[in-house]
Image (cartoon, helix red, strand yellow):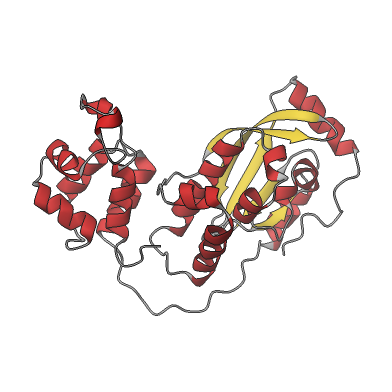
Length: 281
């Protein structure tokens, strides 16, 4: 995972995704590589080509705030991307890693979720393992079963492409959110194991992971295709679980009076989810 030159790997991945035409440069068949050339990035960012090459090669790993801002502008990074670039440029000192305890959802949050009989909601951990889910979330989507890793499910379970009509978007968003959760701690043994497994088993994972997209899940809309109630378009909101670093609560809801609201109500009457679906694993 380019653990010795994370900054360079990020810069190289982002450079290859910038269209030369965006800056009025010739593209198409005149280029042997995708995206911008190194010297073009340097020119657009107002630095020497030699210095930018040193950044990509890892010979200089601590660019100034001005350089970070200039590169963020050239690569059109959003807020999450800029924050990630800053972390790579100013990494925290490595410390002796203490064994992490298994992630658990607090009893009070579980009690609260048990009252949400008409709401699909789930809690996932720092590696996107589903730690808890309401019965309706499980009935809606097999990727939301407690104990299942969402990343592994999206890329390795063929059924995921049927569940998510917008699978390419879901796959890209899932990896972008995983990178936000991991931050610069790519030496985490659990993350290393997960990325290694998926890199071996999924070409789509390898291609998307190499893009170094960084974007937190905050709010949006997601479409589900259910074999019993058909397609549902649901909005979602995400919340950081205070006191539980790395845990995120995701709550789905339908537009009042919509077909999706009726489908959710129907799905809630079908006994497809186990009574213990909200239990943390």
